Length: 191
Image (cartoon, rainbow, N blue to C red; front, side, top):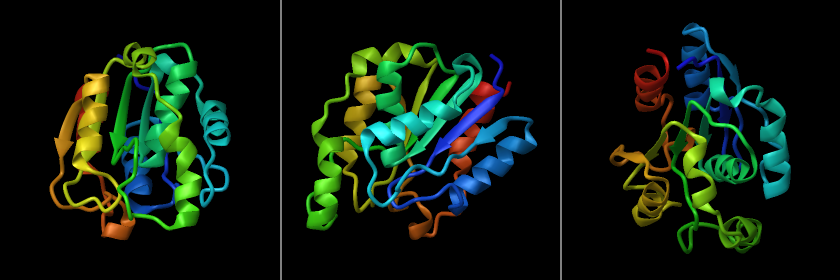
């Protein structure tokens, strides 16, 4: 298995400069992996088509690429995989969701999230597009329920890691590194 490229997709209101993502980017680059962490279009008002289009623009060779997403970045990756051909080295999903917790957002945010929540993801079209799927979640996530994360795990046949009480696994929750994500990439992709 030859890993040459990693693509990291940030979340809603996010940026590739967030500490856990920039840390992971540096660590992977030190291992000789080319890392693309694109600034997604209008991160405060994410739309499915714009985010998928942006993701598609940075992927060169699926067979040499691992995809890493955070929150809505995970949905972007899954929706991209529904439509694209090729098999990826791996897909790692950090704090993924299908539906956000009730009361976790404003009315305006609810309207922005609605297309993401209501447009089905066809997991049967995704399962064969990666050599493995790995999921990371927190039991204290203010936005994502454990049940929602475990539903994605079941649908993909993924391995899931409970990281305990670490919120939404983001810089806002004082998370500056994702060592568990790096460890999986090192074990499954760089050996």
